Amino acid sequence: MIFVDAGAFVGRFLIDDQYHKRAMSLWEKIQAEGESCCTTNFVLDETFTFLARRCNHKFAAEKARLVYSSNEFQILRPTLEEELAAIELFEKYADQKVSFTDCISFALMRRAGAPTAFSFDQHFERAGFKLWS
Image (cartoon, rainbow, N blue to C red; front, side, top):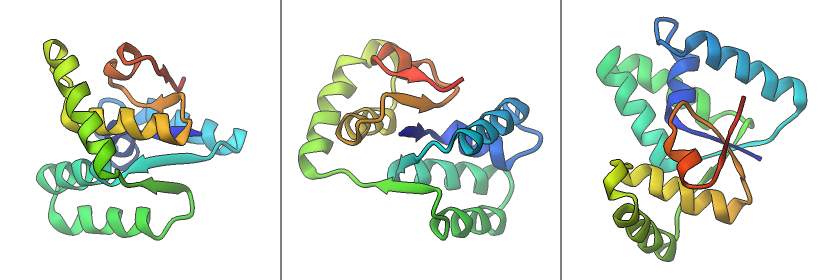
């Protein structure tokens, strides 16, 4: 199971994104290898908010509909206990400026048994996960 972070979605959806070519190559690799993917509702919030600010709300809403209607992703939602665990991680990684969304992702990746992140964010490696490459 590959965890998909916001940067991977942004890279996929924006052709002028600095990671677009790399993201498209890695998306193709996921499909070719038949890997299953998961993400979180927090990551999707971050993604669609970024797309709305960078482009416009209509573009972001189109991409949101595309993701939510797709069978490509399992969308994970945290329990209260996982959100509380994320607070502990948020404090633990404070010196590295890790976002709360990433801390939620770390907790949910552990629950889902997803050891690998499709991300351009090195925080995942620092938290003990592999980066999809």
